[in-house]
Length: 77
Image 1 (cartoon, one colour):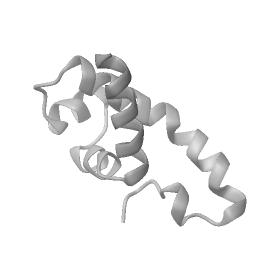
Image 2 (image 1 turned 120 degrees about the vertical axis):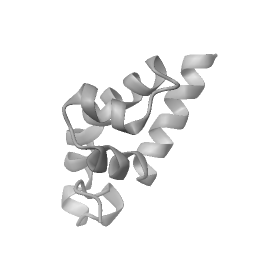
Image 3 (image 1 turned 180 degrees about the vertical axis):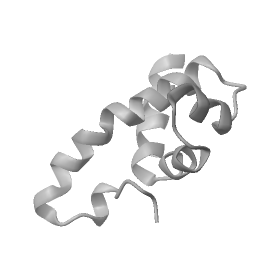
């Protein structure tokens, strides 16, 4: 299970607050990925001061993937 619960796995009362809390973190990873398209998740982890496992879990969450696809689409338009 990822270290950061995805909003769909949280009790209804916490869904909005938890998603907002991690939105900045997702954006930091996305910004790094867009700026370093050939970089690895290990490189991303080192740049952001996290473990590769943490970055792997975050980037494989459905919430992150949806956000990444939208940001990537906006970036390349």
